[in-house]
Image (cartoon, rainbow, N blue to C red; front, side, top):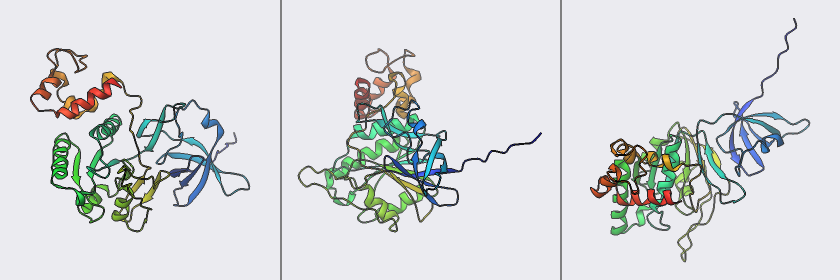
Length: 310
């Protein structure tokens, strides 16, 4: 019997997404411009971006063209996803198949709320993605802002998130972050204006990513990173630089499992009187007791309550 061999499609990693076209790096390091085959678009995916930076995809060259077509998205190990601001869709995938998420926050110019930080960490917890929280611009903080940063870092470090102050301007603690990022696929996220691009440039000056300015009136940043893009780092590993996020709304998160995404709550849930305790109004709740005893930060619990309301 004559055997028929079918050539396997090459696999590449998406390193840039502009909405309709994707840069895909193959296993030789060559970057190819690809579009998405139509059948994938109508595959029931309710998301603003069916293909995300970090995705592994099958692709093939278009006949008589220099461009390629993405034929299949390989199964993802994880994603960072949020609810889309586009009401006709459901979700927006920030990045896929990552080893670590770096959340860049600031105490001032602009201020990052704990609600934003906790929504991000909750989403990362759902996909078992380690999170590092860095408070940038520490070179401009006054005594009150330094104290605020110290209090937040004490809480986040205490529940298992590496957290420290950093300065893209002076280089303070950048070597510490670089060591954590080496040989990993890292995603950078945060509000516009927190200094993500400046921090990337400090970590690897060869990248020379455009840096924006802060509005003095509103103390908010302007979008300088328009599209998510993966960059290879000179010290080993990769970084996915993403556009600034104004709000981080949770997507596909069930109320019954939300408390499990808070490490300090997860550790005490088994002590609640009721197995299905929501930790809101039930008697003999170990979580509420821990808040009263200051074992759980009251603002973390308040953020949990707000997420439950949403």
